[in-house]
Amino acid sequence: MSDGYWAMRTDRHHRELLGEELSRGRLRQGWAWDDRLDLRRLKARADSGNLGDDTDVWRRTWRLLVGEAGAFQVGDLVVTPNLPVNGRWSIVRVVGDYFFERLPGGDHGHVVPVEVIQREVSPQHPAVSADMRNSFKYRGRLWSLGAYGESVEELAKASDPGEESTELARLEHIHEGVVEAAFNRIVDRFGDADFERPMARLLEALFGVPVEETGGRNERGADLLCRYQDALGTDHAVVVQVKRYTGTADEGRLIHALDQIERAYGSYEGVTSGVVLTLLDSVQESVIEDAERRSRNLMIPVRVLTRHDVVPLFVDHLDELIGGPQAPT
Image (cartoon, rainbow, N blue to C red; front, side, top):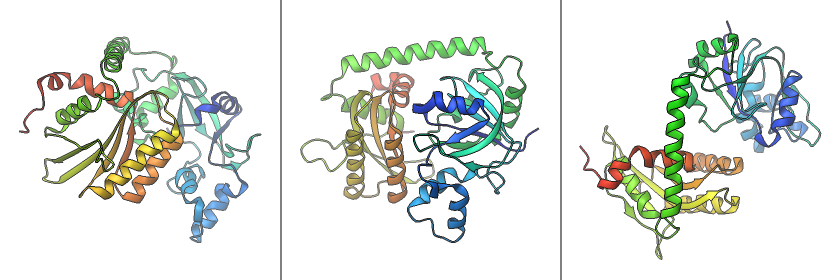
């Protein structure tokens, strides 16, 4: 029985190379393009309060420093999604101390020695709860699976890691089909000019209050503004940029949308979160990191949502969208 359980996402653009390294017992992570980023060196600098511009690298990767309190420990189990096979997990056990060794090309130098326990584990395996699966929606590179330790142990011992819950698989397949059909209809029925209104109606269904449409000639950074009060009586103000982008958007266009969110934060009173709503398939890692940076600077959540976030909400709230905003109870 292990003491620690983790999930670690790696660079999908180098999946084949990182998969080969994993098969050799080397679990690698990026943010390691220079020898100064060796975590042993960074720890010495962190201890002396001298991280400077490398603070983000240390914050994202320090848990790879095997043996440190709160970090990987020898014997811990690590689940690696989409490595080496997309849509499947591997499970590895930490067997040695961290070291630094960059690959040809100059990155992915953070290395943890591991033993591969399982390959091609299905996320739909009966041992995987819905909550555990949902935890993999987290877009960071490393997070704890401590709450699902028993499930990870069961997967590590499974005789058929690719087994799937037949009933669950069928139901999820139906749901995926409904969501995909909804996405196609949304793209077909709503162009750039008229996409804001259904998004406003969606927010009205989610929060139970009218949404102010603030886009246009006098826009101050937000297409939509939603003010509501939660059950505890706390006031919230969400500023929203609506972008009917599909497929993969140019990074610069998304950065501009985030610039607008930051502008809206300074233009409207009491802003508590900022959201860019899109129909993209995915968002570049650099854009996610930019949103995280703004979250830290503004001290509010800032997110870029894709079709995988937005369209299921349309499906779940379709009756309310058709019937109009509901009065709060």
